[in-house]
Length: 122
View 1 (tube, rainbow, N blue to C red):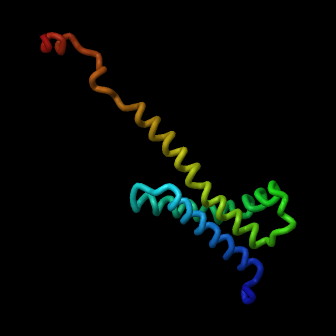
View 2: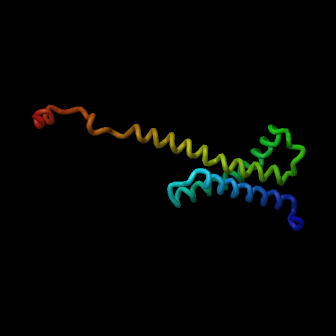
View 3: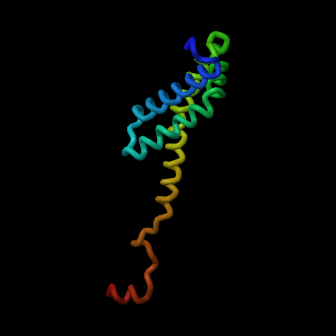
């Protein structure tokens, strides 16, 4: 990366980490189809780019290795971690919402019977 400025190198590390984290998330939990894979990949890349710096810094500080890593390594690590974790959070929300939607369906066998339907059954 000799020809890149420091800012460009950090953006490259951020992008590579985000793409790597998204690829790992797709391989780790296989998607149901192409659409889900594309959504998961896109969300992972965006989350990795947006939250990569903060996540990398937090991880490095918590592990006590912040002084041993270069800014590019911190950015790469944080972007990959944020990207990988993004689908876990979205998967949780989707399961939560699908469970709520499933509970709202009406079971037709438990509908209250009218007087007419009772007469017809006899």
